[in-house]
Length: 204
Ligand SMILES: [Zn+2]
Image (cartoon, rainbow, N blue to C red; front, side, top):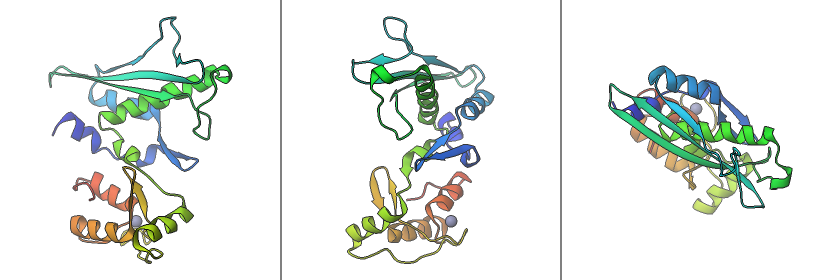
């Protein structure tokens, strides 16, 4: 198993927080998990030429961080760099003159967590965003020409809803077909991911 597969297989569901429809992974927890597995790993908060911990084009601001996974036994030293705009709670860029050190700090933590995800840890929570409930109907109408069918998940009993995965709509029928093929039963997106991280193949 590669270090990426190992990190990618970690179930992070208990360590996430939902804000404004987006799922966030706890930075402190993610870093702890990574260090447990690869204790020599380190992270970098990049500074601009004046030594500030954020960058600006005069209008908006962004941060640049890197997470380097180091494992001498595995002869491994890989850095993934992540740049992230400094955003408000609605995920819109904050004009640079209004940026506070608190906003920058939050962006740095999110950026570092995303850099960990590039190494595999919690990557799946970035792979798909749940659609808002009412937008789901429209998206399947768009695809199928009719409202989505009522199908329940065989694990949790919740209704299977269309989701957005890698920017594309995955209809209820796509999910039924995919999870039947991969897991032998109909699963909602959440349960499919749970099954997958439990050692199965990625849901198709
Ligand atoms: Zn389910």
